[in-house]
Image (cartoon, rainbow, N blue to C red; front, side, top):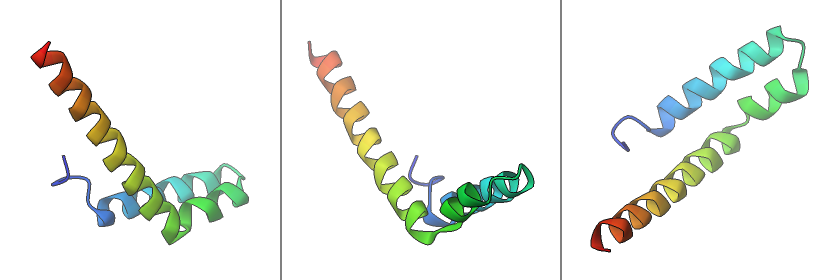
Length: 63
């Protein structure tokens, strides 16, 4: 999963979402999505969720 979920991919997806938010008339949301720290935070959150899922799956299999 980390092979496909790189910082560049996340930044590109957020940039596309920002363009969509701008076209939808939501400039504050577009500015939030274009912020570089948003991409870093989203990548950290995705890694944390992945670690939790892996831990749960390992626990389910050993039970």
